[in-house]
Length: 241
Image (cartoon, rainbow, N blue to C red; front, side):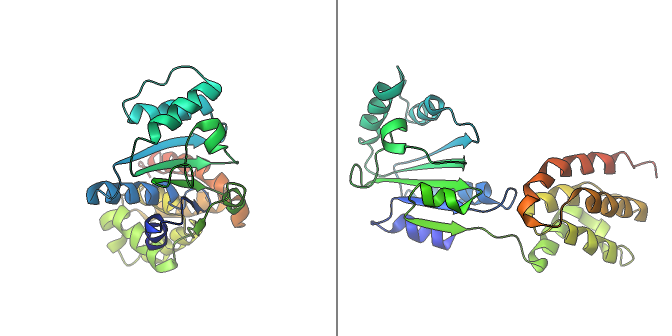
């Protein structure tokens, strides 16, 4: 967060990237930065738009325009020009683009002027791949890594409740946390699942399911985020054990 905030305060940096694997906390970090900047009134406007893997350029432009109270009519170059004209009226503005998968032509296609075109406009993006920060020509790229073992355990404890107070369950609980590979999203989902149920069988079932569905190699770790909710459901189905 400090690195991103420092980059946003640097007059020579206009496009900042946050990158890391899915579920590591990029969006949460971006949203917290947005809240702090709004509270401190560092920008006249802070706007967040989700881009996604298959971006709809017109929808991105309209999303930004709507936040500014502007109906964006037309499409293509005319819409991009209209949006750029409106954005230049904002003395200091931060546009946060979440979940960027590939290069976006921000100035010419979307209509977001920055740098020499509008020095008061800052852009913050999140992406899963460092190379996207490169293709987007980010002035700064900040990595978000997985949580440490200690932080993972603290986060897990905050979600699992009084269940983890049982010393007989702690070894199993720690194994469960280890299988989450330091991903906050996985830790939160799995930690909530057996909350209020201290049966050893629930934790053994959680550990077995995690070992089956979560790949050990972090390159494919995004896949686990689609499987963790399934694990949570199965844990709830074990209530009768």
